[in-house]
Image 1 (tube, rainbow, N blue to C red):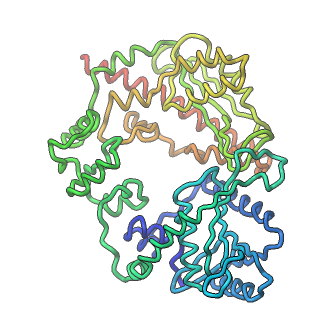
Image 2 (cartoon, rainbow, N blue to C red):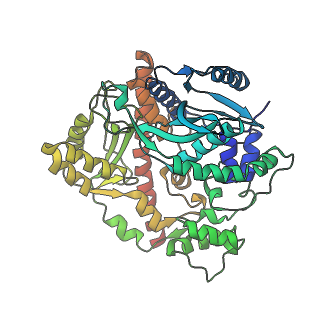
Length: 491
């Protein structure tokens, strides 16, 4: 039997159409190295949490029906007071819960239970209450009363070598979960009916559509000039525009308040034209040779990779620098990738000071490099002055593009992967073995975790260097494109 699970139900809460499609396999599967890392670390954290309950019975089975039957057998024994990965099915719904522990409360003559949710995150998030409330709902429909709810997440005080008890912090969230549970129970029958119906619920445009994985085949299908292409459209604006049925920019009333950049983008979309700001030339003139194009890569893992590092610490792992005295011509390329067996932030800081000199603009794409360099400055006192001067020379090319140039093929985006193939027709990231930041971080993490053999480590480092170098070369070409655009307009 195909059950309604947590993902299906919570997608339904966000959008009935999405919930209906998810039940039928219409929700895109998340793939790639980054998702492999998330799954791997999530399972590791769950297994570590089991050590907090040494007397618990593990109810895990692969098949949900088999697991639910096994859980029911375990619960028949009153001595079994704590269960790991217990499963329940009821009225077409299914759930697997992390940890279920009998408490001293009673409801209608039956024991009550405490439900623990294990999260690999470092703090409470509102969606965690929804996760727990869904589990509580299915348990209640199964005849199990869960009346206490506790979230266990990773503690920022944990360091490698500490006991597992130090790894987790706990948040009692029964009040929030019970409020959400009441809401879910009130729509239980309606949700089940609509999700299982042979007729898909009619979609309608709303704010959650903007980042929906099926937007292009749903509310975005056939709408060429969608309002979601407008940059930095606020939640309030989305709500107001969708309420008046303005799904495309040419339907927005002329007197509707938009930012200046949103007006520019709307005009570009309607007239199918590009925009070049009069400020582009003076902004470019502020960039001084020699030009240094700098890109960092980093990794953030749930569990610390090295001693004296907290969970979720972001670590710089590599950089690429292209140096240029003449626009579009690379005179020197520098690159560095960390030894995956240890924290190399000190070495990275030293190399940056060595390679970036004291003169010329340092061009980045987005603010991450400036923030990271400033963090390094406050980690290493003897390098502080040099690193802060480096941060002070940085120019954010993304902000320059966002404020001064727009092409309708950007579709409201300004990331380097979106603008590069529009500006430079023969450049993209498609031919790279590693071509996305999340996958680059995951590949480095796998090396640091000892999951790759020597040969694969060498290949992976080559791919990582190529990916990082593509980012800096992309900035070289984007800078050249913008300069040429100014020259073309002056002719």
